[in-house]
Length: 262
Image (tube, rainbow, N blue to C red; front, side, top):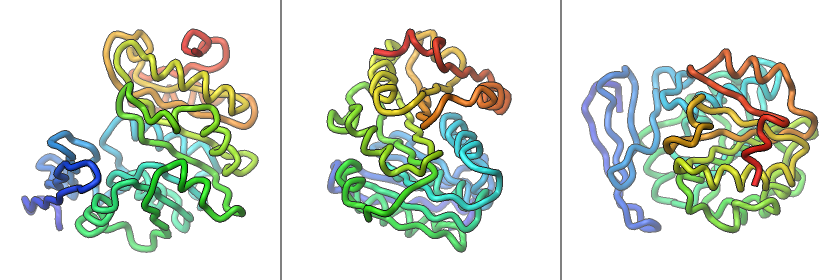
């Protein structure tokens, strides 16, 4: 595929019984949109993989930027692959990184890799299976600088993943200064966000949350990114993430996050 070609590809996904499509983005050179069941799921820019279109993914990208000194390779585990937007971002901004991606839907991963090839030189190991099972089955010696969970798309989260037990298992896969990043898509009441803040606080030394500023008011559905650290939340990150946007951005940590715990 090439930007602006108008090519559309489709694939039936047996696990979910839905159709996945890849279409060119008429507004972005080199851009493609992955949709599942008619709903946009991911955006990829093959020409500039360091440019992330979706706001919540840009916020995750900023956390990855802060997780280690700029430009150097890292090790990353992606639980929930989608169109591998973040794996592409890591390779573009940190060449030589070692990455793993876990995806439940084999047909989806095959479909994405066939039509949206990864940047040259990408070191990515793909695993088909359940996120928690795959986490436990990894080589015992593997440790990661970042573990990114992007599975929760609404209040009905997988019960075996939305728990402090799962987050403790994820922490065991982190290097001593590694970062656990969780995207929580939720309805306006933020019930899932509250439960996940509590669960992550039970497993990690500290937790911060970043989102569009209005999300914390609980007026509309959207995404809040939770980041679990293995030491105190770095105060400098609050200002840095707020400044990086997308704007308006807000970061809560420490006592400011207490109202969202439980």
